[in-house]
Length: 248
Image (cartoon, helix red, strand yellow):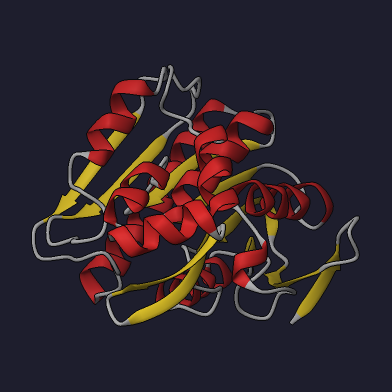
């Protein structure tokens, strides 16, 4: 494991592989980290295919610096851009899981020359409003009066702040057309009880490019970590690599 130190002197933990020119960056979800099954499977794929590869922990996650509640989507966007600008070399395919799917879209807007393709795994752009709606009355009152609340979801507890929701609103990517002319694949499980199945279609409608593909998996849930899921993720990387090669 290595660390990139940003301008605030915060350490961002990452692991990387050196390969050929095209790179792949995996972006984890909310309250997840770079050591999940999808990240490791994609790393194995990258190693086998001699691709540059990076997986990293956003601040407040995994081995990176800080507590979760100290950061927002704006900070995690900056973490991804720091990795793209200072650690990654050359053109990149971004693979974003859940919240990572939101971050990859923000990065594609900010670094259009570097980003050659996107793969969303249960991508969850603009989830701030839905998350706020899921809060109970006590949570919402504490956000309003104290600026922070302890939230429990699927047996897992963490702190959400008022600033978290303010920054989520500022970073919405689907309010207007999303200018991206390169290939994008959205993979979504129909048994996903975290991100609704219509989200990929909402993304498709907003993306200006024509090469946007949705893959729905009937028996898959939000984790997208079964053998079938991982196989389809790898096949999607194959597809993007072929398209990118044809265009270059």
